[in-house]
Length: 264
Image (cartoon, rainbow, N blue to C red; front, side, top):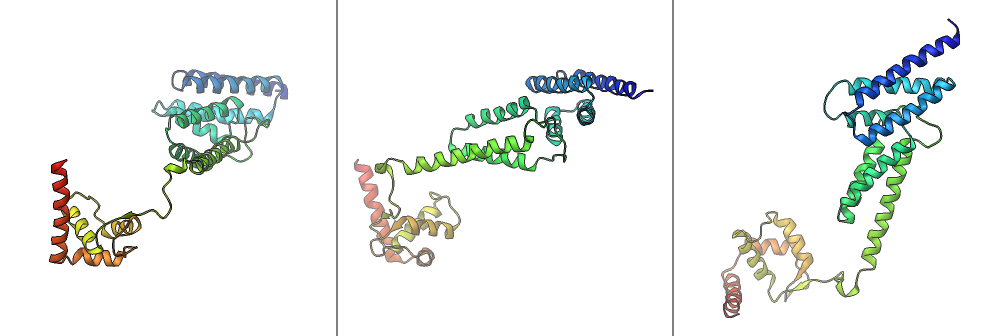
């Protein structure tokens, strides 16, 4: 058998495998993905048939065989499994990477906040970076690898959103910005404030249970009438050692609050 006959036989068998793949994947893949996959592979197959390209032939032969095996299993999640193969074999068809990027873009638009968009894109970048890809394998040499194209798009989108987030903070209305050193001033001593917080926690009106974390936050957000800064250690000490005079003064303050509520 001549080399020409051998090539014709190989191409005929590859077309048979391709047709088998098309048949198996029909109705089992996302419609758009099915169209992109079969059209792109069909085009490469026709190019290979016209002029035997060993690289293209071997690429199609391996990828088609893998897809047929995965699609023929009949299990759920076949689109995801086949897409994993497309990444593994660096299926850098222009239509496919545009489809993949558009899908990320749609999910990004569904996120209502910049933080949500950033988290989504960070997750997508993680998936791209961790994708398993065969070395020296590609659908076409016309474009960069699938990992580079999608990864660079995600990175640029992340950079844009981070800049937008920073500008949003910088350009916020000065009248609505809280000074960096702002604290709530209380007409209570540290002991009275500690007593009040203890009562609120005991009666489950304050639901935080970690006293150290709570004390750190309160010391950064409040100042008392006798102390510009509330010491975490002092707060904890007075929290556990309530004096009768302190409790009485807090009760008097709360009675004044109750009296105002009753009259208004």
